[in-house]
Image 1 (cartoon, helix red, strand yellow):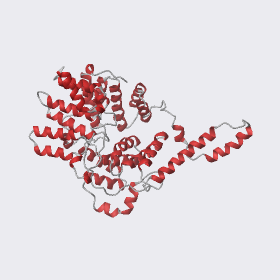
Image 2 (image 1 turned 90 degrees about the vertical axis):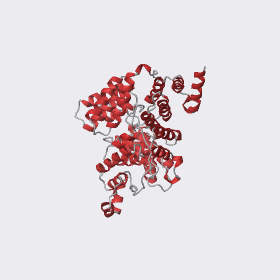
Image 3 (image 1 turned 45 degrees about the horizontal axis):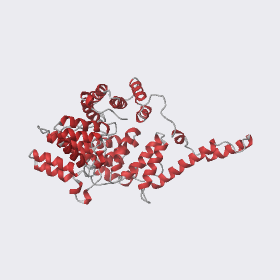
Amino acid sequence: MNIRLSAAFLVLSIGISLAADPRIEQGAIFEAKGEYEMALGEYRAILAEQPQNSEAYFLAAEVYLKMPKQDFARALANYRLAYKFTPTMSKAYEGAAKVYELMGKKAKAEEERAKDPKNKPTEEVTAPAVELTEAPAVQTAEAKAAEPAKAETAPAAVETKAAEKAPEPAKVAEPAKPAAETPKPVETAKAAEPAKAEAAMPTDPFEKGKVLLAEGKYKDAAAMWREVLAKQPGHAGAYFYAGVTRYEMGEYDKAEFNLKKGLTYKEQGNDANYYLALVYRKINKADQEKKALAAYLKKAAPDAKFRKPAEDRLAEMKAAADSAKVASAAPAEGTAEVAKDAAPVAEKAAPVETAPVASETKGPSDTPTVANANLLFKAGNFAAALQMYKALLETEISADERYFVTLQMGNIYRELRDFHSAVTRYRTVVQQYPESDWATEAERALEDAVWLEKHASELPRRTR
């Protein structure tokens, strides 16, 4: 009875928001009984489905400190993951500080407390990213030191990665206002101050990346964003500019991925919605393009630099949809003469681009392409996606696509609870493509899949 009361108290202390998940209560019961590994199993199960659940990370960290043999490294890693995904979680910063105090590192403890937004001057508080990225090609020693253990990192689809808040570097030149569809932050800045950009290249990777982007040196700029993210995982500004860079390079999958992470960038987060719309236009996803434009206009100021092109594009899409309805409507009288008269009207009203409208209802084709396989994966059609990814590996695809496809196969196997196959695919990415953008993500997913494979019988059955 006392154990039940203690567990109930722990659940209440968590907050009403997560009390609906029975695994939280079950974990609290195990914890109250001293069955710490079982409690961790419950929290890992939550993270397998909700890789950004800050409360689960926090609870796991608490368990590591309650164990007979305290695991400071894993506790610290999980406290940090908690506040990375919820930057306002003061108890997570305090938990990390507590770990350092237990280790006798008072200076480090104060550093953790200083990261808490409530302890910073107003002008220094920025909105960090809440979600991955473009993973750095090689994890640096500093990044590894920042995350001494990753026992609780959840399996992340190509979209999830722990993000650590860091104050944004000082803002310099912003992307210039585009004349029509494609914003070119680069050309205007280059024309304005070419001599200055060449004469005084910043040493800070973030500022240097912006200058390189403004000069159109996209590959060099991309390397800067990877460097920033290696040192400061979750840097929202780096995500935003990485997305813009990838868009300029025509790498739309990566652009979409990074721009979504850049939505929390304090300086230009809403602009990420406009760039997302440009990405969706390029890949003929009209419905998502409309949503991104609407999201941008909802937050954009009356004089926002992309407001007019966004409004013009929405008007263009509406005209295209209206003309498509006119063209497909049956003649009122059903006579050949009426149909003949109506045809020129419809043809005249039709805009140049009507393909995006048709694509709204068009699903992925059977042609083996990365884009089609990704659509099947996002739709939850794992069996068909898996077959298409396998077929792609038999074709002459680029190395970049090959390791991405392999990672996606691992994600599908994990969804299908075939953890052994998932481990094999993740290990392939880590071992054969260590320099790839996704190597760090694969390493984390591998660690989680290994744990899931060993403890599959302890996990609750999936309810969806």
